[in-house]
Length: 88
Image (cartoon, helix red, strand yellow):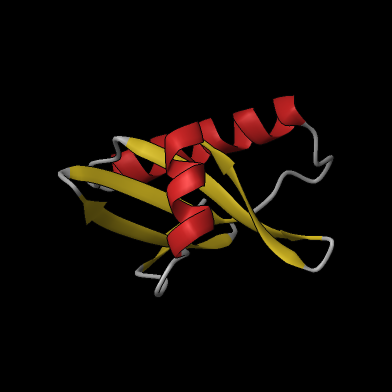
């Protein structure tokens, strides 16, 4: 079982989750699977998740992958803090 840090936040009436994780192969299909799995795990804990993204370091920079408008928002605003630890 792994522990994944996550932020569960709400802005403009939208509940979103950001997971501190990246797929080992770092390709689009693997990231899509990981994001879907983590989103489902967060929902099973009772969290409402309308949109979701992965947050990871790539080339020394924080990078986001997920719902395009959420990625744009996170790129401009970032995450203030991690709110939960998800066990998967």
